[in-house]
Image (cartoon, rainbow over all chains, first blue to last red; front, side, top):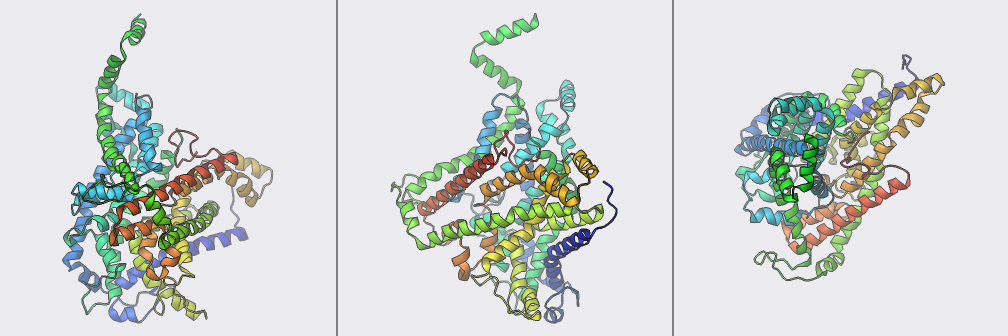
Length: 283
Length: 325
């Protein structure tokens, strides 16, 4: 399709998308400018489009609080452990389910799909985890939500359609067992879906505030999302020192929580479309 | 010869032996499935037993042996004014969300598809996918400062343009629209990814043909692109409906406040707030079941509606949940 000439519609379209892009970016830019402003700079402007001052003082204030830097490490720990466990379980389940001729496979599949349509709800899970003694244990932040069925099915579809059967067969001839085939052959050749789903899981664990809110009451075990929530939503001002503008401190904590996602995102973004598209092909 | 012996073996061998044979031959596959199934049993199926709670006057000391009270919890819920409100809000907010949230990403994908500078397209996509990955807690923090009266950038701008300031987050007239708008802002780009993938899968020959026939771009979008992705749109709409009662919680729970409960308290926020403040497990379990049943009903209704319109629906092939052709 050779379309060189721009029609009036194109100018309109390009402009519209430009506006959409700027509107999407603005809140992030705004919070970054607020977080890096001096007190004077903060009070001299409302829009914070052009930074009028620059200082890292708000970050210093935030990170000098044990509550914040301990929380940061708790988040890193939970995200790492959670993503590893999630990917392991998801990949194993997806690989087995991608073997259509395996006796019992359909039963497993129905058992898993059913949970997408029906669940016991929050209250029984709450009682279960409480009676398992998982309150105030970091395990509660990643074990009960280790598998996302939707992700498992995406990965299963990817394995079933995009990993050449001949590769697996030749590995079998070489004497590999199924576990070795999954970890040495299938996973290394499925990087788009592993990267995509790994990102989904890690973003989920990094952002999750719901399980911490329900099950963690010991402030030493708070992940960053929880500290941020207490600061931002519940307006708990316990740890805002008197000489700090609360909005600027909040902005700094918000930036600290968003930056890690922004760092990983560009590297994995290129896999999205491929991973999702291939994972979504019908069987 | 060897084949015949094997076939005879299978007929003759008792079922149990065959079962064990398969189990041994495929042992590694079954071994890998064990932890996965164990997880599902413990964290998904075990809580399902907790449904009996909804019919009990639950006491922690007696556990699941608490006295049964029939449908008492359900009756008490439906006579509770706050629950009625939450039920109504759930319906109203989700209808709005559906009417706006399904077509806008389709439109966005169609517009993006008309961009022929690859670099420009990529930048727009990269930026608009981004908010999907940021939590509602962080966004609530940003929105609180942006939308507040007197110092928030949006209100300052409104005033500069000669409008009155608006208490977006504390005014029952506006709060629902704030929910809809911010949800669109967060998810439109991300949702469009599926449609763009579907558009990329359309046979280019169709467009070439149309071009030869002298079709305009508007006509190609309307007569080729849109019909080609209509099944994807339908599936996304069904999935949207199926999850509709689960989404929205993060957003509302972090953005709302007692002043706007009247227009924004939904079933999930009602359940979680009460769980924290006044945990009556039986009652809340009943609320959760009502939610599940409504959600399942919506899903089935939407699926049947799709079939009525001649589309494949969600059960078209096994495991096709969320599929793109």
